[in-house]
Image (cartoon, rainbow, N blue to C red; front, side, top):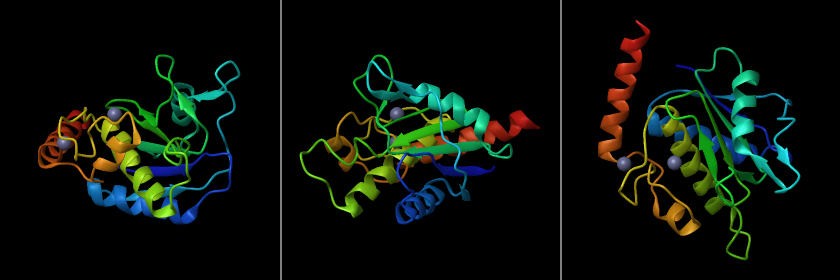
Length: 184
Ligand SMILES: [Zn+2]
Ligand SMILES: [Zn+2]
């Protein structure tokens, strides 16, 4: 199971942040996560009317552009993401699929001041684990502290731990087992 993390943002990559996301996603799922270094970027994700980027279009692009051995790919970006029915999203993932994307844009702002780097990193870690969890087939968890809890604002993001709760961890194990049986 090759899981890749790929910086696809407009600004230069923050390697300290990426390293932390890589290590914490590895810990959360017990799987190796690799960095994919490429300067390719999504070309057609910008929506001029909304002045935001379509997370769904980025997911489609990630599926095509990913290294072929990548069973899961998490794209990290600094551009502001949306899906049509929402003002913005922190990220999006294909449920039980391959691709996920997380944006730092709204995780770094909305409180009127720029949060410190450690806080931003903690938030990006949580949303990356969350979206990757969706690609493994995990759905939203009712526990507010579980990383799979839905979060629509930063208070809810900050209330979460960067790990799966006991129930989600068990469910993750079941989904992995089903996936392996499916491929046999
Ligand atoms: Zn979610
Ligand atoms: Zn949970």
